[in-house]
Length: 123
Image (tube, rainbow, N blue to C red; front, side):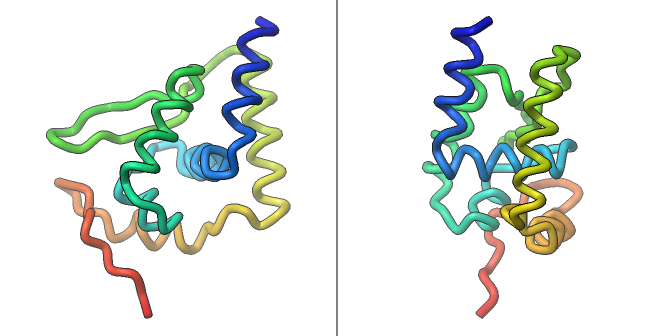
């Protein structure tokens, strides 16, 4: 268990992964790579690489919908993971690290059928 948590904290020490994980905790129903890319203004391959790291320590899971993959936090009953999720979310919210309005706007533009990967940045 100690090695697992050491690895989790190592993974979350990267600011991009911490942001992604915080955003997924805010939207537990999940986000697509293109949505995270739009929100964080990072290339999709950077988002995908970071998602794989989070997935490797069992913090998130993925669900395929056609050619798109939805990423969401794992619904764990592990008390330590629940406390970690609460801590990460509380700190991210208190520090305004989570831009809730931006996330909600991107998700509200999501098509019922597919991820809107061509979301334009507002000038």
